[in-house]
Image (tube, rainbow, N blue to C red; front, top):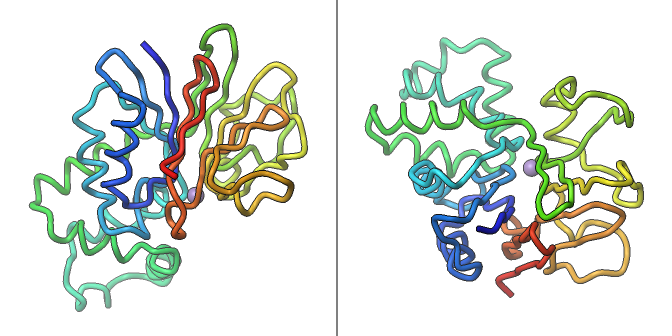
Length: 234
Ligand SMILES: [Mn+2]
């Protein structure tokens, strides 16, 4: 009956399954996945298809799913290169922005799906939430993919936009809430300044940063919120 978080799986099915084994994930546990399941690695869609059949896996949206959602619905209807000629500049820019951060791997996998499978994937992605708040073993947590841009201590969480929560990392030197851990992915731990191992989940200043750079040749991390035990595949 434990609660786990993982983030930035980035198309790495083997490592995702390996981490589920490592934490001995069972039906009584809950796993929150904090976005960026897709892109970079080849198997993001397969990870999604595993997650969607597990009622105890709760997905949050990352910037990669956000970008994918802006393009996949169109790609689902129009899969030919010719049909792209009918796209307006804004849609083309959204597609190119997504491709520039590794979207091609997902586009290839999505095009290989049957129409029913595509619809299942799209409906699943549309359910992803922007943030979650939790209390586990007396500790409070806010889960969000990247951070809380435009932060004010009294600002209600439901007023943050996708641009404020999915793209900009927080200031890991700053304590945002004295009594709440802010749990994020998005920025690999090795890119955060300071003395800490790049292949370990970082807990500092009421932040928990889960991204160990799986999308950049790094590894996958996880945390158990019940006791703040951290896990890494290295
Ligand atoms: Mn991200």
